[in-house]
Image (cartoon, rainbow, N blue to C red):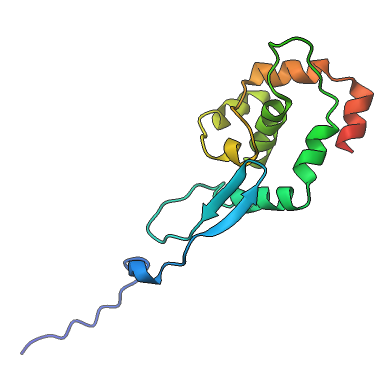
Length: 146
């Protein structure tokens, strides 16, 4: 007599494999850093900031990012200062990642995709951000942030 295998599978093996033909085509997404093409791929791993491209599109569509940068009270004299978009963008990315200390800023420095979405040329160090805040006039900075 043969026993029938009636064991139930507690955890399924994973998501089903979708054929390449069933993938949705890439769609254009306009961001402050230019036009990108987003697509959904079941087999590609993503980061927790994977949806940032759509938030960047929101910032571009409402001109919020350009308005935020235009009114920033940070100003450098000379040619050695970092671009305002790079300083403010680094802070912005760090905050979106849940960071609350200057030392945490270095965690976003290795990211090569997300800074470009905001029109940044590079991310800056925690020391550059700290020095930038020191250069801002406090009443103007508080007014700008509010």
